[in-house]
Every structure is written in structure tokens, then in C-alpha cells.
Image (cartoon, rainbow, N blue to C red):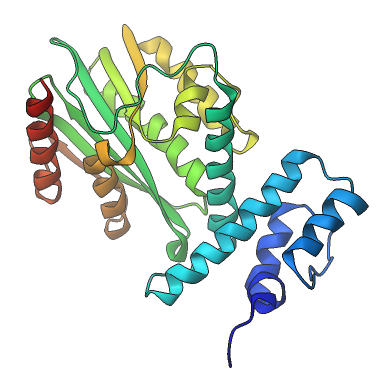
Length: 277
């Protein structure tokens, strides 16, 4: 049977689960509108949604459509929580860019760059495994030459969203630094929202507030920590380790060696850094 936009956005039981998670509608309200414009009219004119709720509805609809196209091209269908939290993560990062904070995050390069001499850089990332109801975290510690001092990946068995996985990555990265007795480093991730929250530029979203405050408390255990943002292209080794956590039971650690699965990504980082110096 041919799929219609009405089925995609409203009639499918999975879609109804997604809309319920947004809390834009009363409990047990079955969401259905003849068109997307009717949804916006309902929210803006009948329910007096504020601009934030309208933006949330638009982003969730976009996420539904995007996942539908991903499934059409052979990728996995996401669970409702992953769709909603992923959409809200994108929305919050977009809003943070518009806000133009007075104290911007320390750096926003496209590719990985080495830390200054005598300091270390710790890259972290998270990944969501919806089918396993778990998330993965990847951590890579490097010096100014790009050499790996340590790395780890951890599976956390809890049904978290993308933003929660990123927040746990920062928390695990700090704990790993403490375990390795590193006290002067740059902690770097690819979620601008989390970087700004840990830098205390903006308040953390309620879903990850407890994790962020835990990380802020942990910062007191170190001599000097700088929180930095890098785009996904500059965070690939940590991202690969986060995804690799899908295949482990609990926790894998490498000390003074690099996991073979990230060797190529590490080499690319070092080569690129050498070219721009």
C-alpha cells in the first residue's frame, strides 16, 4: 500500500508515540490533521502555543520525515525517544547559534587540532543504540603530537536520547581523565549545546541538567580544564569508539596504545593538523 503523508505524520502508531512524547497535546489525544498547516493553525490559533512550541512541532515533523527517508534508503527506523530528543537537540543547538552569547565557546574548528605543549586533549562523543535501549560513549586522550595516551568506550544500558548520550560522554571523559591522573587538558565534544552548558554560557536543558551539574562539580578535581567545541569531522575517533560500544558488554580501555578501529581516523587528524601549521 502506498504511504501517504497523512499516514507518516499522524496515522502510524509509531508517529502517535512520537507526538505523545512531545507533550504538545493533551494525554490520550489522537493527533490527526488534514495537512501540516492545519497543525500549525491548531497550535498557534486555537491552543496559543508560544514560538518555542511551534518550533518544536516543526522540528519533530522534520525529524519524522528525515527518518522516513533514512528507512527508505536502507537505514534503521528510530525509536520515538530518539526522534524526539534528536529533534530537540538540533533545535536547541540552532537556537544557541542565534543567541550570540557574550562569551562564546572557546573554539569551533571543523577539524581536530592538537593541544598546546605540555597539555592534553580529550575528545568525547556519544551514540544511541535504540534497539538495545542503550547508549555508547567514546573517549580519546592525545598529546600535542597526536599520540594516543589512552582511550575507552563504554556502554550504558539505559534508554537515553542523543542529548543525554552526549552529556554522559562529557561525564565519562572527566572520570577517565581522573583515572589517568591527567590534570591539565582540553575537553572537546561536537555538541555545541553541551559545550555551552558546561562552560556555563547557558543553562542546561532539564533532561541533562543533573549530568551537566555532576560534570561541573567534577571539574573542581583538576588543575586546569578548557571546554572546547569541534564539528563532527574533527571528532571522528571518539565517534567511532562510541559506535563500537554497541558490540561490547560494559567497558573497554586502551592505555598508551590506540584501538585499531580508529587508527585511520587518527592518522587523518594528525596529517590535517600538520598541513595547517
